[in-house]
Image 1 (spheres, one colour):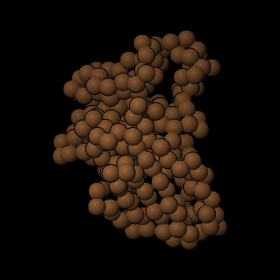
Image 2 (cartoon, rainbow over the protein chains, first blue to last red; image 1 turned 180 degrees about the vertical axis):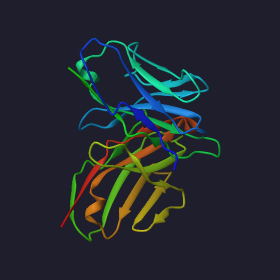
Image 3 (tube, each protein chain N blue to C red; image 1 turned 30 degrees about the horizontal axis):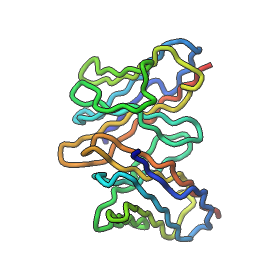
Image 4 (cartoon, chains in turn cyan, brown; image 1 turned 90 degrees about the vertical axis):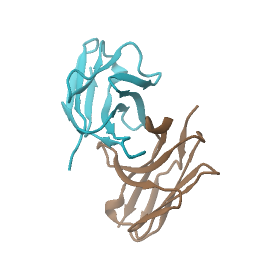
Length: 115
Length: 110
């Protein structure tokens, strides 16, 4: 069964450092997302990406964040200068609107710890 | 503001019990609706989509009331393995964004 894969599974970084979280969405999907979940809190939308550009972003997704699809398979989230409050689980998801609304498929997540 | 609200929980029920979760959403233009399940420190996984006519999958029944903007999930004959957080998810903007509720935690006790 096709799945969304994320790397690394766990990343520890010092405050102020840049991190790049990587995702390989399901190959025939058209929409890609990043969500985050701070421990014990709800899943929060960060950004959606379609046709090689951002289609929607939340207020969390400020200038420190960026997304890119550098090739045909990878979808990355970059945090330029990490803060302690960026520590969270980051989930990538993909979705195919080809035949009408369907569910989003989530990767297993990257746990980011900023120290 | 687009929001999805759920029962605050947690729900602690004995094995074999029937439990119901409620969810309301604020955006009347929402297009599709889902229940996801999330185990501790894992990714959300689809439990079932919710259709206008209501739908059932084994012990799980989902209902949608568009007029009241209300979604429900019923779990019958609960098992220990049903212990998880149940997330109500609503799809806005013609499929472009998935909005999550805060989740309701279920613990099924032996």
